[in-house]
Length: 162
Image (cartoon, rainbow, N blue to C red; front, side):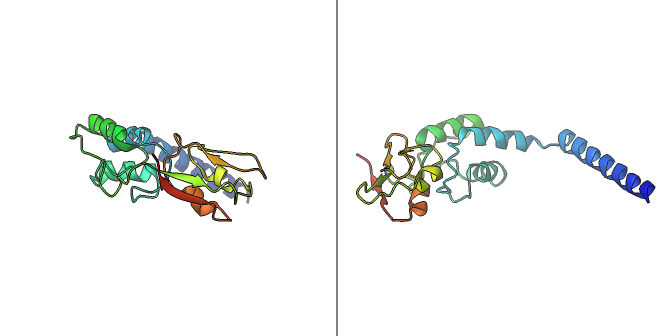
C-alpha cells in the first residue's frame, strides 16, 4: 500500500516538474509582449474598454489585434505609449471611450461612511474614515464607476469634471 502511494506521488512530482519546465522553455513570445502591454495600462480593472480587466485587454491587443485606443482611464498618454511599443500609428482615444473626463462625486450629506466605495476604488481616489463622510480626489479619479456600484445608499454619481 505504501509503495503504491509513494509511486503515485513520485509520478505526480515528475509530471509537475516536466510541465513546469515545458511551460518555461516553450513560452511564446507573445506572452512577454502581453505583459509589456499590460504594464502600460493603468490597472484600474474598470472594464470600460469592453474587456473584464487590463490583462485581458492587453491579450486582445496582441492576440486579436484589438484597437489600442479603448482605455478611458489611460487616455491619450496610454495610447501613445502603446503605439510606440507596438510600432503602430498614434490614434486618438476612441469616441465611445472619450466622454470627457468623468469623475465620481459623493453627495456628502447622504454618505454614511461605510467605506464600501473606498475599498472598491482601484486607484485610491476616495478618502474618508469608517462612519465618517468620504470624498473623491478628482485629480486621481479615473471614472471607472466601480465605487457607484458598491455604494449602498446611492450617494455617488458620475459627473463631467471642469
